[in-house]
Length: 165
Image (cartoon, rainbow, N blue to C red; front, side):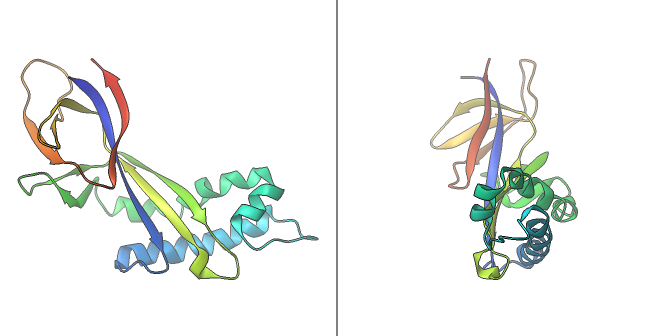
């Protein structure tokens, strides 16, 4: 079954997020959203929420990318790994190489409507097999001898890239 894969781990952050790190991201992305909304909004016929703005101005599709700048320093604090997703032995597993922010919804007057998704991506890994709902993986993607680890299926983790070998 060998394949090169990248895993993606997605979290959703909104006003009800309880982790301090998430709260900071919520506040900073909402602040940045309000600034970017003004840039893309029609001064004579303004709208309040992101989806209305996107319908009126297709260039507003750049807003999620622009909000990413408010998140970069927080992601850097993770030092390249998500510690809340251990492998089956309890070791910190989830190395991250990059991330993508998606804007689920927002409203310039109502912070309770602001919601973002962050998807973190691993570097390329070797998927050797799937055993009992666990990925058998290696960080080494070439050769014929591999140091392996196992990672259990998780509802917020998916294979985001797949290349059969």
